[in-house]
Structures are given as structure tokens and as C-alpha cells.
Amino acid sequence: MGAILVSLEIPYKSGKVFGTPMVIGDRIEEDFGPLKLADGYDHAWVLKKGTGMCLAAHLKDPKSERVLEISTNQPATQSCTGNFLKSAITGKKGLVYAKRTALCLETEGFPDVPNHPTSRCPCFAPAKPIPTQ
Image 1 (cartoon, one colour):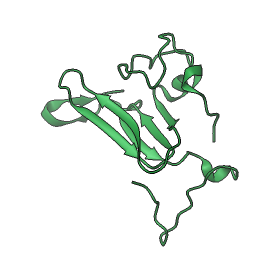
Image 2 (image 1 turned 135 degrees about the horizontal axis):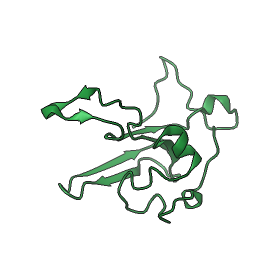
Image 3 (image 1 turned 180 degrees about the horizontal axis):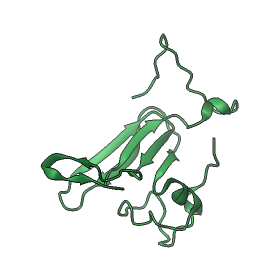
Image 4 (image 1 turned 30 degrees about the vertical axis):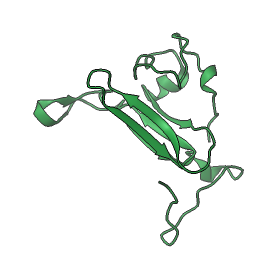
């Protein structure tokens, strides 16, 4: 598992931290190694420890006022902003899916956990499904 950085320590010029409402993508061009390596967001965010289902993300479209809330019993959420879309896919009403025109949020265990014996490993097999909600 890579280093776990505290969002307060991530060097964003805006001074805002994750957990503070902001527009997705406002800081996507920051001069920060993990953002440059992924060409945008493609990161696992460690969630606060809790028991049972916990809020992992809250998104709101200010124009339509639609809200998306994601809850999980998993310790992390992976976010990806369509960094490698090539503008070759045309969707509904002729809309072209270009680079960074998408957002995917996946609740998950920590990435690369099986390679770190001291980490919590969500071990599973066909007879033992992943205990996720």
C-alpha cells in the first residue's frame, strides 16, 4: 500500500482540503506528484473509521441541485476522473465523452493490501463473498 497522506497535508494552492465543499476538478492541475502521475484523480481516499455503514461521499450539482450520497462499510473510496478518455466515445444526444468528463467512485478495501501482511486483508473466495454494502 502506498503512503497514506492526510488531506490537510496535500499541497493544494487553493488551501482547501478534501472534506471541504468545492468543485470537482478545481485542483486537478495542481503541481502534486500523485495528480501528475495519474493525469488527474485516480486515488484511494481513506475514510474515517466507523462501524456499519458510513457516509463516504456527498456530491451536489449546483445547477440541477441533484445530490448523490455514497455510504459504505469499506475503509476506502477510489475516485477516478476519466483521465484517459480519448474523445472517441459518443454518448446520448451526441455528447462526446472527453478526458475528465466522468467521475467514478468505488468503495473498496485498501488497494494493494494482499502485498502488505500487516494490513487488513479482505480475503475472499468463491465460497466466501466480499462482505460489502
